[in-house]
Image (cartoon, rainbow, N blue to C red; front, side, top):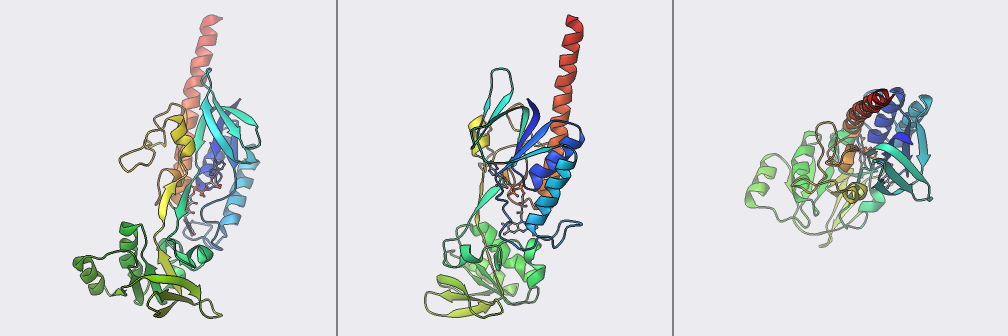
Length: 309
Ligand SMILES: Cc1cc2nc3c(=O)[nH]c(=O)nc-3n(C[C@H](O)[C@H](O)[C@H](O)COP(=O)(O)OP(=O)(O)OC[C@H]3O[C@@H](n4cnc5c(N)ncnc54)[C@H](O)[C@@H]3O)c2cc1C
C-alpha cells in the first residue's frame, strides 16, 4: 500500500511527488511521458530553468524525486477505482495494480489544433499559442495570428501579441469578426486579412513561414500563433465521479481537492492557462493537502489502537 499515487509526470505531478517524498511518504508517480510542451525545443518563464528544454526540466525533476525515495514508474494508467477498504486501486496498462491511500491526478490537457495544413507539423516550433512562452523570441518580427475554433482565445491573442511586435497580421480564417472587433484591432495596429487560410509552410531556408490563402495570396511570417481547443485529460477523474464546474472542467477547491474524498487534481487537467510554474505550484499545494489528510488518518488509527489496547 502506497501513501499516495500520482498519475502524470509533468510539472504538477513531479512537484507533488517531490513534496510528498520529502515528507517521507511512500509515493509512486506513474507517467507515460507525453508532456504537453514536448514539441518545443526550449521552455521559458520558469525561474532558474529559463531556456531549458522541456525534457531536461522533467529529467531534473525526476532526479529530485528519486533522491528522496519517490518511486517513478513509466507506464500508462488505465483506471482508478475505490476498493471496499477505502483504498484506491490504480490499474496500469501493463496489468500491474498499485494500491494507495490517496490519489493525485495530474494528467495535463490535449491541445486540439486547428485543422489546417502545416499546423501540426510545425506545432511548438514556429506555430505556437503562448506569447508568454515564446513571444520574446519573435519580438519585432513579422507575426501572424490565424483563427480557428477557439474564438475568444484567438481574438485575445490577436491583440495581445501586438505587445511583442508592431507587424502583426490577424487572419480570422473561420472566425466572423463583428464591425466593433475589426475596428478595435485596426485601432490597436493589428492588420486584418479576411479570407480562408489554406496552409502554413516553411518558405525559406532560415525558417520563415508562408501563410497561404485559398485565393492564392501568401504572407511571409516568422511565427504563427493559433488558438487550440484545450481538452482536459480528465477521463480518470470523471470515472471516479469527480464533478465538473459550469465550464465543464473538473472542480477542485483551493488545495486541489476534488469532490471525491482522497482524490486531488493539479495542473493543466484542471486549469488550461497554467504554465509550468503554476502547474508546479498547484502540485505542491495538493501534496501538502494530501499529507495533512494522511496525517489526520494516521492519528485516528493510532488513537483507535491505543483505545483498543
Ligand atoms: C507547445 C507548447 C509550449 C509550451 N511552452 C511553455 C513554456 O515555454 N513555459 C511554460 O511555462 N509553459 C509552457 N507550456 C505550457 C506547459 O506545457 C504546461 O504548463 C505544463 O506542461 C503543465 O504541466 P502538467 O503537469 O499539468 O501537464 P503535462 O506537463 O502535460 O504532464 C502531464 C503528464 O501526464 C501524463 N499522462 C496523461 N495521462 C496519463 C495516464 N493515463 N497515465 C499515465 N500518464 C499520463 C502525460 O503523458 C504527461 O507526461 C507550453 C505548452 C505547449 C503546448
